Amino acid sequence: MERKIRIFHPAFDIGFYLVVCTSLVFAVIFSLVYPNVILEQGLSHRIFYLHVPVAWVALYGPVLSFLFSLIFLFSRNMFWDRLAFTANQLAFLFAVGVLFSGPIWAYSAWGVPWDKTDARLQSFFILCISLVSYFIFRYLVPGKTKKAILSAYLSVLCAVSAILTWGAIRWIENPGNHPGSVLGKGGMDSDMKQSMWLGVIAFHFLFLFLFLISNRSEKIQDIRSKLKSELD
Image (cartoon, rainbow, N blue to C red; front, side):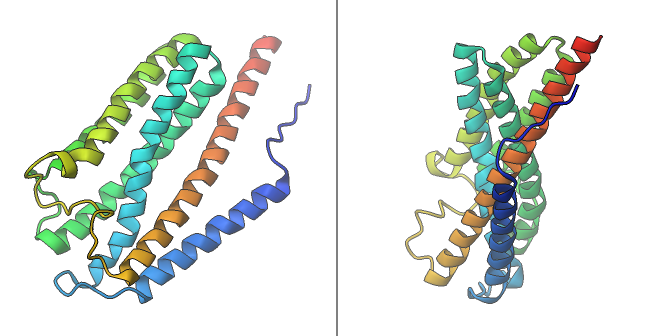
C-alpha cells in the first residue's frame, strides 16, 4: 500500500528554501560589514544581530504552542497537537542558540558570561527547563490522546515562562545588567536598526521554513504509525 504526501507544490518548497538561504546570508554579511561597532564591546557586539532575532523566535514558539494547544483542548483534533509540538521543538532549538550566543555577548559587555543576578537570564533559563520538561513528560506518557492532553497543559507552563522572560526587563524595577527593550531604544542608530530588522526577518523566515518541514515530518510519522497498526 502506497501513500503520497504533498502539502505544498515542490516549486513552493524550492522557492521558500532559496528565500531563507538568501535572506540569512544577506543578513549575516550585512551585520558584519555595515553597522558601526560599539567601542566598549568591540567586534563581539555584532553577535547582537544574531542573538536578538534568535531570542525573539525562541519566545514566540511557546506562545504559538499554547494557542495551538488551546485549540486542541476544545476540538480534540490531533492536527493542533502536532502543530503545538512542532512549535515547542523549534522554540527549544532557537533557545539553545540563545544559550550559546548570549554568553559570548555578555562576556564582552559585562566581563562575565552569565550574570546570576540578571532577571532575564534567570527567566530564560527557567523557560529552557520548562521546554525540557515538556518533552520528557510527552515521551513518558503512554497513549496518544493522554500524551496530547498533558502536553497541552504543559504548554501553558512554557508560554508563561516565555511571557515572563519577555517582561523581565520591563516589569522589574532593577532587572540586572541586561539591556532594556530593543524597540524602546529611540537612540539606536539607523544602521543598527536596519541590521537588526534584517536579522529578525531572516530568522523568522528560517523559523517558518523549519516549522513546515518539522510538521511535515511529524505527519509522516503519524501516517506510518497508522499504517503499521493496520498491518498488525
